[in-house]
Length: 151
Image: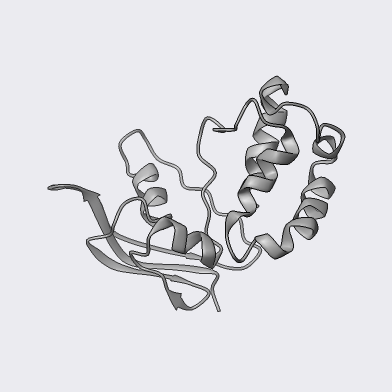
């Protein structure tokens, strides 16, 4: 069973179609990179998969469940998140508070302590900097917080 399967996906903005029949399969444990020139549709694909853009045709399956066209907050409940460019942290809140905010969903809330342990294992510096304001971290450390928040 595939983790993510995209079948004949079409999407765009108003009358401007950007994605024309995208097919994609991602297996568990697999890393997939989307590459292409500016305007090729990479961002539109990610926005469509995360529910920001509604597809006009096609299907998105996540762990064999049809999630096509679900709103972003419902996709988060399913386990689909996007870590956007620019980190978008709350700079005046601590690293820990930035990570706690990510556990707002019903699915994530009960697992906060476990998730923090996992994230600190991946990024030990975040445990050390737990009480530090996120905006005072280096750029790389801020990116770690953004990734950890998505996880």
